[in-house]
Image: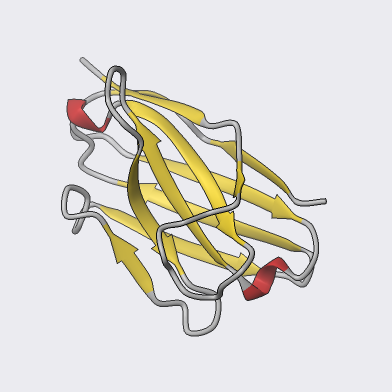
Length: 124
């Protein structure tokens, strides 16, 4: 049974920072790619960032490059993935979801296990 739990969301002023955490537990999750997506009100869900398992290769959407950093701490049955978000903008306001692709170690943009999401609001 794979479980994915996000935390760290909240209200922050423009220009501020937040760090989101994703705690994923289950079988051998250290072998799989894990990513963050977000869904803003009235918009479709979009991929934000992803980190592979093997070489730690990372992917970022153009809208967050240079501002967000993804990292992971691997253990055999528990993996924690962080999304450090700096220089936040009002357009970063969204519900952020963590997800795992349990069929590949590489970032493909397609995930099969999702968390419930954590809300981020960037507003003055």
